[in-house]
Amino acid sequence: MTVGDPHEWNGSEHPDVDLPSWHGSVFDPVAELDPIERLRIITGGIPGARVVEGVVDVPFDEAWAVMGDLEDGFGVFQPDMRHVTVVDRDGEHVVADARSRYGMRARLRGVLRPGWCWLQSRFVIIGMAATPSPDGATTRVALTGGVRVPGRAAIVPLGTRRALQRSLTKLDRVLTRG
Figure (cartoon, rainbow, N blue to C red):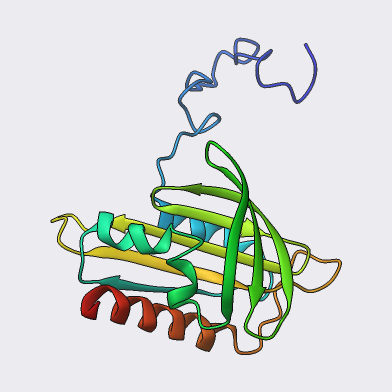
């Protein structure tokens, strides 16, 4: 038996210790997370990251049709994004070239699937999540992102929350007013 290897020790050396089985117990937890919960957890580990959440008054399919359309929909509600071109896609893995309204460029790599988008480059992080409300009439939405601190897994926090809130407001306007 190796000390610290939970798969080798079953508690039999100490008959007065009653431990649950290893699989499916506190030692092997299983958790189902919706995309918004996943986004909160990921950004929780990134210094300076902020998450802005809201509800848009359209069903999930309509909301994600705009949010998940990197080339035509994403730039409509992201105030600082001018143009995004998907250059490679392999299933849910995406590589895209983005250009901001200020002329900056980024090669974004990440995952895009219904309700979830996480893209990053050396200098930018973009995260979006959406999930239908229980009645299906509205959609819960969460956004994060910003400029990365060079050489660190961190986001420059200046103005991030305000920019994300503007994006969420614009997304709601685009979805509900066409």
